[in-house]
Amino acid sequence: MSSEPRRSVVLDKMRAGKKALSFKNNFACSRATEMPAMAGFDCIWLCREHVPTDFHTMEKQILAAKAHGADCIVRVSKGCYSDYILPLEADATGIMVPHVMSAAEAREIAHWTRFHPIGRRPVDGGNADGRYCRMPTKDYVEFANANRIVMIQIEDPEPLAELDEICQVPGIDLIFFGPGDYSHALGCPGELNHPEVCRVRKLVVDTAHKYGKFAGTTTGPDTMAEYFAMGYDFLNCGSDVGAMNAFCDKVLGIFNGIA
Image 1 (cartoon, rainbow, N blue to C red):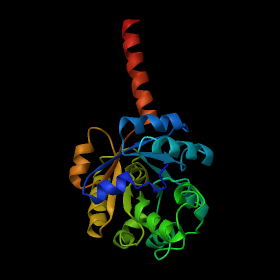
Image 2 (cartoon, rainbow, N blue to C red):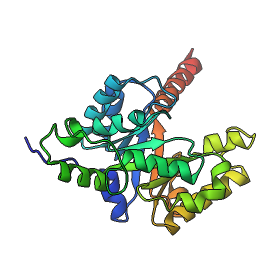
Image 3 (spheres, helix red, strand yellow):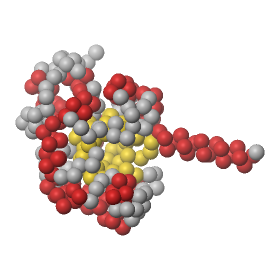
Image 4 (cartoon, helix red, strand yellow):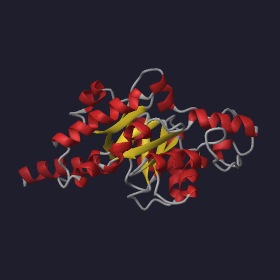
């Protein structure tokens, strides 16, 4: 068995100027993770903000993705630093922090999740990301800083005043625009093509690239090409709940037409 640490598919692709594609899991089930990983998605997006996924289930989902060479990004619940670093120690490829509201908060996230010299993440090394103490500490912290992703979500109007400053924070890799919550904050929930949502979608990718950050957002099959052409490096397209709903509706539509 190799003791080499696992590089990030997503980071390697984006750093090479290529695009990366993710699939979202709402089901707290490793099989729901393994299937899109087997299908060939670069990344599986796990969620602990909206989904009651415990850490043991999350660990099984990360293992399922790794078995087929896919990354896992865990959207964390906002809380103490342990909520942020435990997915990383379980060898998730990265974390996504929702509803970042200021540059000060972005700096705090980097401080908690990056090792020296960027931040002060607590060092263990005895877990999956440190190859269970098979990596020398110096190699471990250097590898993690270079090969694990820290994403922050911009999904509220408030942080836009500091967007330039937020996009300059060392240790933050990717700025992720959340159109759903942004439309909700505007008082027009679900209107993802609202003019202000469209303006900020473009603003986020342009500002991220201005300061050398990657940019990500959500999409559907009909807008994937448009958002990639807009400059987005990382898109999430599809989810397990969406796929099951679509198939159930299709089958029932056929059945009801026959019956």
